Length: 300
Image (cartoon, rainbow, N blue to C red; front, side, top):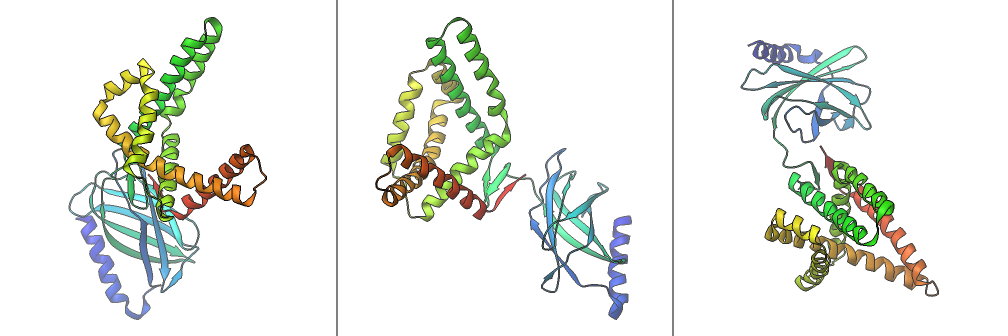
């Protein structure tokens, strides 16, 4: 009831204000607002007056569910560049919200109300609208654990005594990186970004090329009992189906790497292969940074 009275009062004030109304700000929600239980989620808006970005504002957002009484959630937004204001909000549930924005500057206060549908996210991040899901993270975690298992098994055959103990302790310490979500996201973003760039350059990954790479990795895993056991536990059919999707991206990214090697070789015909590979990898990393910066990547 209090919310309805307040919104009615705001509308009435706008009607009665007539010619004495304050600045005519427009507010655009520039990043989707999502809800996850017990977690603050990012929000971002841009404030404009006519076509010009408005800076120097103190901005507060008050969230109230449109059809339920879950109280009010208040967020103080921090100013960035070009009229962008951002913050984090923890909402009780997804659904339709009325967001009251309070904008203050030089003693003048303006209030705006926006209706907005808050949804649950389909993943932990997105690249140009394509979600990176929890299932994606779990698969990358498995791939990293497979490599650790192979390294452990290799060293168990190679070393004994203190050397083996030291080696196994090192691989155990690496498990922290495997569990690090940011590390996993970085791996996924790197691969997907370069695969996108390869497609932009006109490259494709044929079924034959993908199968060739899959056969190589199958042969590697088949050498290690620990790796085969982990794949079996995950589900062989599911594993290789997902791995095929990953190797489509890997084949595409390899073609960008090959482009870089050919480019360096053409520009430096007298350069050794080792130096060519070094320079090509350096240019590949620079290209990767440029590609990532050109994409719309949102991490929740």
